[in-house]
Length: 502
Image 1 (spheres, rainbow, N blue to C red):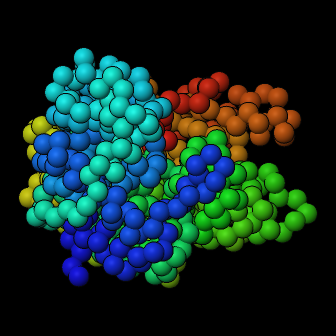
Image 2 (image 1 turned 180 degrees about the horizontal axis):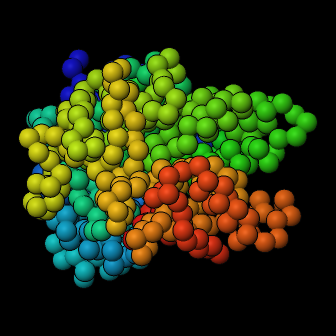
């Protein structure tokens, strides 16, 4: 069958993998699982509920961490012909209500961990007609019970969905400025998930570690996972990652660079007399083989470092506006230093140093933000905002962000990311932010205080200045760092673990 919509993804999974587990997750101390057939039935029940409530074609928000009810609700919403609006569970209730209003949401399905939002939503978001709790056992104060509604609306569901119908509105967690509602169609998400064969066999076990409201997790962990027959294990808490790795024994995970760097630091600290591969097996569940890296730049050295522990790191590149993957390295086709080869459904060109991309995964635009859409799209080309180039083999290289580019008084252009990547190679440097101050380069550093203590480094500012001095010796004058600020606390970050620059 042709797979062009998310409904096709679910049908394909039920037809192809049937009684195989699609998801595994903990309920108290027990592992429960849902098969591909059960997922198909549950998503149809959600679709029938949406239709019965008169919400077909409307905007329905999902608020919660990764869970089976969240995932089956997402597909139930989109496959009913409605629009799913995933909301970042870590935002304040005021920020959440603002996004619900901006996205014209008329129904909310929420996780009990955000009961505070459910209690204020009717007053703050008067257009919302239905509020449903994923965990609540009985209807209470006008809040409906997800499980009861699911059972009440069991049955087959059919409706016409066109691949170019709006499927979801995903809010960016941008490091600067106001978040934008990215409009993605069924074709955008489906093509991104199915266009590249990564040769991952059905039955491979994965584990979700990224927030599900972010498109990287949604498309690659969930949509692509369901298309290729993955058994996806749901991590219930960031506090339980190591315990859940041992419990579920994943073979593949998706991570952002900050987590990979932290993971490597822990492996290195645990390395002693045992061989490195045995250290990794003991600490990461015993079967982890592949880490897909995305969301930000990863120093290529970590690919080599993790390989010593028997783990292959595949660095990719993407953005929410491209559903999200633009390029990726593969086990059998990769280039060190690149962010991978362009996906088959994507083409790219460089305009004034900026990477522009075009293809079936590029968004429709930003919801109710015509000016911002006009700035981002030109004749179907998405302006990524990233500086870089594409080589003769279609491998992509990123050198920095256009909007972060520092233009000095002498006219020289400096990419802060280039300096950050160089200096952050030093173990004492945990986090770094480079910017312009008084027409010169300034670096603000959050040191690794644990490392400093272990290595008996008493004067941390002096040690960091030595690192800066060593860097300055090997670069042109205009790229030298002239000011250093030493932080006592980590930088503020987005929920995608990117440092907020402004």
